[in-house]
Image (tube, rainbow, N blue to C red; front, side):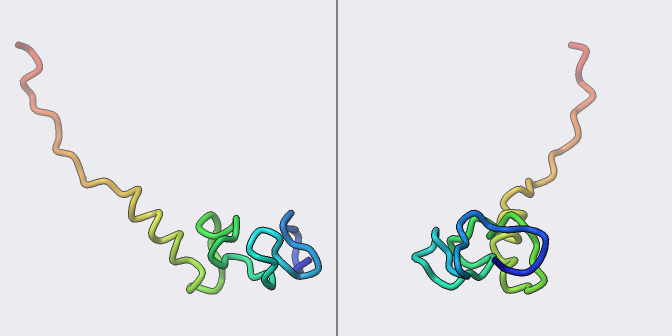
Length: 69
């Protein structure tokens, strides 16, 4: 398990059981953590940035004052 206060349920003997038994690299493509958490390595935050941009909606115009018809 990687150092720190958490453990990934897919990691066993420093290998990822979810991503083709590759060496565990939190945030790599296919990792359950990718896009859900911010990493110190900014290269791993690309998916997080993409998700944030998709959530942004264009500003809506204020409602018109013609409510008493």
